[in-house]
Structure formats: structure tokens, C-alpha cells
Length: 447
Ligand code: ATP
Ligand code: MG
Image (cartoon, rainbow, N blue to C red):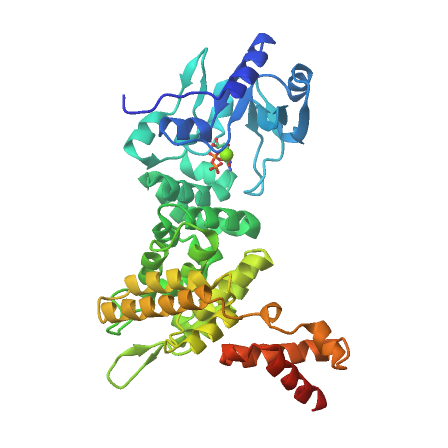
């Protein structure tokens, strides 16, 4: 057998045994079984039981009513919490999002039937071994994402499952079973019933996975058309230009795969060329150009990320990288210092990762030249860091108090003088002396 053994953590075993001693059935279930069989370390262990929530609470000393109306109680053991959920059947779905009611059931089979994909619908306990009613283990071996039961019915119940299916495919490197995929094609439009927050969660999980290029499946099935039509436009945009060999969309996916699986980097790659479809022009030789696309792209990215309800910090960081991805200043210490201040010292090293990914996803035309440039750019950056050149107001050799002693009153005016002093020092680091800066501050304050 190729599949790995399931080894329940001691605390999970302890919870299952306590429920069994109380006369109930209990199993580890869902993602943890899937991941164990794949030899991956599960993120968390969920437990399913025939005990009702009140009964679960009677057995354990410390519990939290996390989702008691859905039958979920969190059992606390030491500093860890485990979700214990009563076997349930989801009542009728009326809106493609939420079951109207949940009904508890004494039957494990009923509980497994309501789950989304075969690979997510297995349960295990030491006493009973693996319970696999839908050949989830077979699908794991074959590398297939397949709905439990009738795919269309399952997606009509809950449209988010379509996003989840593609996302699991990207995380596991699996392909989608044809019926399941066909059902998504047919029902993709119903994703519009799902909240932006929940779509965001799935998009991010897909984007940071080992297969970010699975965005393609979102596109092919018609899901991006619902929540990210800007991506469809990228797929439709050719790049007739020697620097490129792909459409904007294909280039985007290739570039995503070249950066680390980190949220901001992957999103920045996803959106770095988002404005190309609207910035495209064709010159007299028939060559495409995309002037201004980083700047327009930044605004489009902001709009898209807000629409998908991303937090401000993420929006800010992604937009900064999108705006800066195509800056190619001549490599001088002064230019690089300016770029560092503009982009922010924290985010700056990401620029190299992004630019490198962008280059590697282009054609091989002048590739070496581009990589050499990037190398020089990065060396210059390292030099600035190593010699600790001043890049912020707090590194100036004068501070606000010094300026107040010169008679400049506290307030925005003082902040402005400090900013202007910083600009002088960014231009010429040798200027960062008390004497020079106090002199300049005096001149500014007179003006
Ligand atoms: P991950 O935690 O990586 O997202 P997971 O498989 O643990 O993967 P969860 O969202 O934590 O997914 O859900 C736990 C289990 O609950 C799933 O394995 C699946 O059996 C079931 N499940 C979750 N969401 C749905 C859904 N929308 N429809 C049907 N079953 C679901
Ligand atoms: Mg989980």
C-alpha cells in the first residue's frame, strides 16, 4: 500500500476514547484523514461523533460553544482546542449558501454523505479503522477531485464548493474529475451568491499553493468571469512583442509560479499586468506596447482587492509592488536609495523577487541582459544596507527637538522641514551631519 499510515495525535485519541467510553461513536474526519493518507501533516484534527453537543459538553471539563447551532463544540485539552461536531445532515439549501437547518443523525454514513469531495469524506478511528464509503482513498491515489454524489446537486446546495474543488486541486496537484468539472462549467454563474470574503479565502489558498497556475481552471470553468473578469481579459490579451511569448494571462500564471508561496507576492504577481488589456497599443510595425500599465494596474488592483474585501495592509502592500514592478532606474546609489524610500525599505527586497519572476516568465529575448541588470540593482541595494545609509527621518543626525531649539514650532511645518532634510540626505549621504542640516533647517524656517 502506497498510502501512509494514519497516526492520531495522542490528544485526538484521548478525545475519541472518552466519547467511546461514554457509549458514543467518534472518529477523526475530513481534511486530517486526507492529509495523513498523503503523508502530509494535517493542520488541524476534526472529530465527528454520534454524541449531541450537550452530551459532548458533559464528557469534557473544558469546552467552548464555537458553533453549537451547527453541532460544533471545541474541546480544550492543555493549550489546544479540537472541534468536535455531531453527525449531521444539512437540511434543504434554499439560497445556494446555507442549509436552512441542520439535523443531527445517529448515522456516520449520513454525515459523510453531506461532505463535499470524496477525499474529504473519510473517517478513521483506531477501533474501527478507515471508513471510506466513496472511494476517497482511490481518488487520492489517482489524484482526482470528485464530488460525493451528484456534482450538480452538490454545487447547487453550496456554490462555494466549486471554488473549494479547484483550490484542493491546486493544493494537492490533483485534476478534477470530468463530471465535477462539467458541473462547475454549468453552474459557475451561481458563485455570485457567495460572499466576497469566502471567495477571497479560497482564492488566497489557491494562490499560495504549489499550483497557482490552477487559476487557469477557475478561468476555464467560468469562475473568474464571476468574481475576477479582469483575469479573463488578461487571458484574451496577446502580447505581440519580442519580450513576450505568452498571452498576458499565461505570462501571469508563469510568473506566479516563480515567486514563493506567500500571499502578498503571489497576489502581486497575479495583478502585476492586470492593466495590460486596457493599456494596449499597436505601433506601425504591429508591435504591442503597454505604456503606463503599472500605474493603471495599481489602481485596478486596489479596486479589485477592495471588492474582494482584502484588509488595507494587504491592499497597500500588493499595490506598491504592482506599481513598482516595472521600474528600471539606471543603477546608481542615489537612484536605488530613492527607489527604496518610494517603495519602503521593508518591501524593497520583494521587488527583486517580483522582477526576477517577471523576467523568467517572459521570452528569452535579452533575458541575460535583464538578469544582469537585476543583479547589479540588487548589489547596489546590498551596498546601501551594508553601509547603513540614511533612508528615514529617524536616521537623520538631527531630530525634531534640535529644530525646536532653533525656534521652529512643533507641528506639521516641523515635519515638513524634516522631510526636506531627508531628501537632501537621500541625494547625498555625506550631508547627514548636524552642522549642515541645522544650517539648512535655519534657511528653510526663514522661508
Ligand atoms: P482546509 O482546512 O485545508 O481548508 P479541510 O478539508 O480541513 O481543508 P475545512 O474547510 O476545514 O476543510 O472543512 C473540514 C471538512 O468539512 C472538510 O474536509 C469537508 O469534509 C467538510 N466541509 C467543509 N466545507 C464544506 C462544504 N462547503 N461543503 C461540504 N463539506 C464541507
Ligand atoms: Mg480544516
